[in-house]
Length: 93
Image (cartoon, rainbow, N blue to C red; front, side):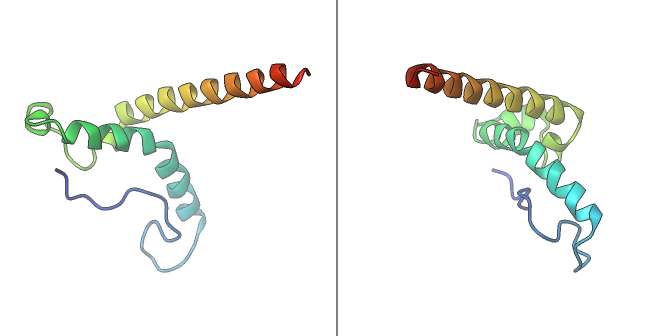
């Protein structure tokens, strides 16, 4: 299992002890990459997958991680949208 730092958003993302526009950008990036990080943690739990796929703590923060995260966020938006549309139809609007 990985022993990586926590990739979830926090107030001081770059560790300079002040909140700047850079921290805001890094928070947005961290939120965007949450699905990729979760997928990486799932893969890390499979015996031998880390060595075979040569995964490390930064694997989900690259181009492929961003594409996977974008796909999964799109899927979440479609699911939430269909649930909300179903609720509107059930309410008779």
